[in-house]
Image 1 (cartoon, one colour):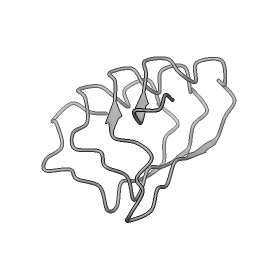
Image 2 (spheres, helix red, strand yellow):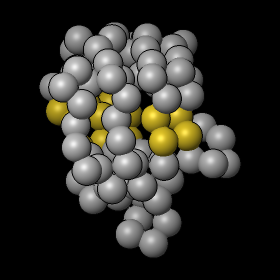
Image 3 (tube, rainbow, N blue to C red):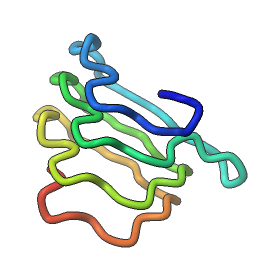
Length: 88
């Protein structure tokens, strides 16, 4: 993650055994503003992804397609207007 609040493609690819990833901001200070396509690639064991209270406006197509073990996603209190048909 850089200072602009973007998660880049493959940023966590070396953490293939990671089961939970949490990036929660606050109402006054969101941490994540943008997700690149492939941001969570390589996280094959990821079961829980918490991204609440951020400034995410859109989800890239196929952003979660590599996360076949994913059971729970929290996107509460973001700026999302719609979900793409193929984000999973």
